[in-house]
Image (tube, rainbow, N blue to C red; front, side, top):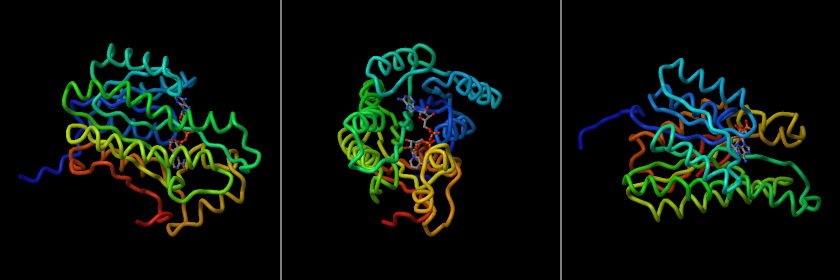
Length: 254
Ligand SMILES: NC(=O)c1ccc[n+]([C@@H]2O[C@H](COP(=O)([O-])OP(=O)(O)OC[C@H]3O[C@@H](n4cnc5c(N)ncnc54)[C@H](O)[C@@H]3O)[C@@H](O)[C@H]2O)c1
């Protein structure tokens, strides 16, 4: 086989969930810079979604913002229908949307559990179920699921989040096996990243200190996670199937 080290996503369309902020925002921009058309999914962030679409368009790429709550099957069905209308096909699906909550386990309510599992895990089931049929029909497609290093490490006061993200890894491997070779499903399990999720607004100082207690001694920038997503979306990763890539500063070593 001739070597072809090509990171271009030219001619492809990607849909990134929760794309108006943080890691999703960086992934959407990285994909657009690589030539992809991008569907920017967001929830209640119309201004940020529109600003990102504008930024992508100014790079010369196509972009559309579609609001949808990816934890609701009716919203996901509408998202898939609207995406089909605006861009026809979705070649790359990035399941990035997520929430986090710090709470001692014995104070965690059933509602906390359900909200976390539905948003961080069921959403991946719903979007995968919505977009896989098109990928199967075309005989190609890529799904990238954003998990977390905490899926492997576990973390006190984050049990539902860790359980949901561990579930994402199981779902990734199952779909990778079921839909290979045509469709490649892989996951990214980032370490701490400089977004609203890892800030003293959302996290106790004790937990923040744990996040920083990794060999690289810093948190990542969202662009460092987007670089991994770009690799997984490109043909350079064509032999990756059901893998978990860890841009994590050394928090987990496998
Ligand atoms: N920041 C970190 O350190 C870190 C580490 C590992 C994994 N992650 C994961 O990365 C992903 C992105 O997080 P982030 O750090 O960029 O934080 P973020 O809060 O900036 O991004 C999460 C995005 O998801 C959106 N969202 C939440 N629920 C949604 C829903 N039901 N429907 C549609 N959109 C929804 C939010 O509006 C937000 O834009 C998450 O899945 C998170 O768990 C983050």
